[in-house]
Image (cartoon, rainbow, N blue to C red; front, top):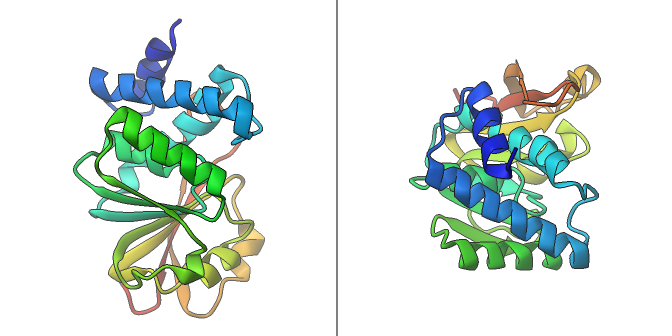
Length: 210
């Protein structure tokens, strides 16, 4: 099965009906990730099939939760989930932030080569980010704990905005240690094609934001 066929079938199984153009762009992104990974070590996963399962499908699982127009992916790495979501949702605006220059250079190249116009790539630390109170969604799969994510990104959502944390197993102990200023809105189990391990999305809001 080609990467195109794998992506089309896997996305369909997850309820994501993507156009052929979108899937082709995701394949090209995958090819660039493989190419750059050889020189820049952007991800420990080398096998393209595993990249599809553990990176692309994992990112696609968050698609139903992107309801607003302005999204920031903090600690995006090589664009996960932010670049994948941006390719699928060209009508929305994505900011991909990472302090690692190799990763942001890769993302800038992806933008240029694939003609992606709805992405802003920022090589900076999150605490230096100027657009506080701006975003509908602050998403990340990079942080070690929910507390770390909130402590670093608390000023970023707008009044109606939320935090979307991608996690593996249900993060019971992390939930108990959440900072005072936020509360859990929902925790969703995610079904990821070809991935047996548990996946969850934790949706949080600042207290008083509903």
